[in-house]
Length: 572
Image (cartoon, rainbow, N blue to C red; front, side, top):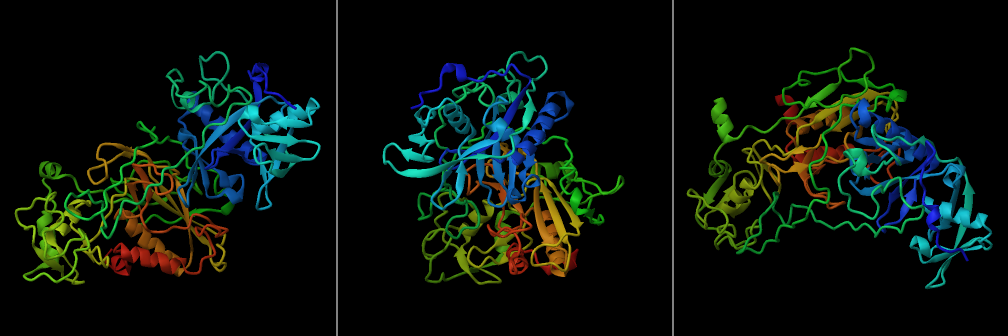
């Protein structure tokens, strides 16, 4: 039986070249290698961007995997955080980069796989493949994986993997395919010794302390490190609880759910977006054409972000600027502008007070309307009393007026109000979407289910930034994972109408918001805001692609729920 790897197996790369293998980590903490083709593309992009980081430009944020393998179209590797980001669900997985000698198993295209319960073959992580190959080459027919942190033995003669505790056996096999990419070991200027591609050295100087078992965790690892503990993602529920359409503070006197409190696992201010072009070769094969710029394509509010590929030297992308919030009352006074309406006045504009409250609950605080408002201990108002009850003028739903006031003050206080019961909107609703850029392009390829027309491509780009007064934690940094995000619409009459309404929603800051990711638990990050987008073209396995005959109808309903209807187009 094979024994633990000796210290001599630790890889120190005296050669200027090595074999690079990129892997992602699943929810159980197990690492899976990307295919050799995908790794070649990732490594090519990584080396190019790392070279730019060390004196030739700024480090770009993302590597879109769909360019290497169409089945990976939803996935993007976010280099600054070393994560794989799924655009349609927001799921984030850790990624890592391992370097191996050229004569290793990955360098020869050798992969070991085990048969899963659903009948598919799953590759072992690259270090296990290399370890198995070395042991078999030494004549060891039975290899114990305990030194690598696994409770299994692999029998080369019977092609099986056995659980040492349960004695459960699985089939294994040895496959030969394309070799993994050979890469140049790049060192930063002034660096001596073994080159490092870890997050710490890539993002900064590489001289600060690193929490972890090894200083150079991406390149100068021992050949067979003990696997990390499984990455646990905290389950965090959405911020909109019960019937309240806005974040609601904990109350001492009401039967409302308390606000969940989570910590930001990323820590620290993220780096700013670089100046790299937006995947200049990403769509060259599609014959992209920018839509002609309209009257709203330029604005002082537009962010100065990387632009997309241009079909001609003088072409200008069609961008839709975001409508940013009005300045604070102090800033407005200095600029001579008019202040926002007083919250109490907004409530009075859309309600009529009832002398006799109906015998029902206020669905905001869950107290009887005949009782004192559950928000009376946290909301002060000279104009609205704690027992005042009112009815909204359009939908006639009744609430404590103080509860409506608290709900309004917990939003971005834009002068609009939305009924928490039926979602009727009073005034023009705006959101809290950070500053960014929306680009629109056309190409001739058709979407499944819409073979009679071309495709509209929408690219949203929002950089990391600082939260404003309308966000959950004003003054604190927020992250923007997976940008730029690419979305698709059919280029027919219905698709073009949806596009125009999405432009309105973008201007009103309704497409994204800053909050907590329901899939990763990360706080203070940019997330989708209840208007679904199609982020895949050629499949609909996850519900985020085509064909989907009901999508255009459904997204029109979602836009209408945000107050964005065809009437808005007539007002423009």
